[in-house]
Image 1 (cartoon, rainbow, N blue to C red):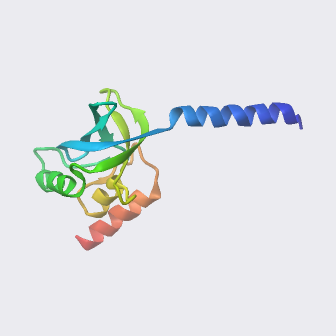
Image 2 (image 1 turned 90 degrees about the vertical axis):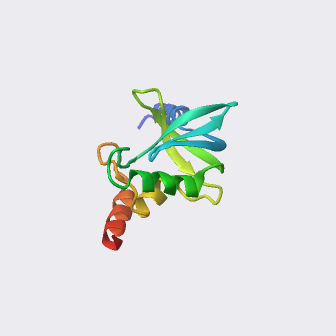
Length: 137
């Protein structure tokens, strides 16, 4: 085994992973809809699409209840956004963590107001939360 090359490859993988992962903290200033919020970042509101989940659209049943839930749980709180990517609409996609460290995205699913967006999520905790919420109706 060629150790210098192996070490170099491991170093490059580490740097690449860190370049793609970022977090920031800011005040959640607006709930646009059930799975999109705005968080202050560098002095301006940044639109955040909540990663790995999907919620009812505005014209679908329970959309207003889902929006109220997000407002009650997260509005005007200092949150941490763990950025995953930027979507085709230019929105930051990420998981949002509340001041107590809990994951807002997972709370919404666990409360039954969203489901796992299976096209973009392979995290089994989301599917477990969804099953549990369905079981509790």
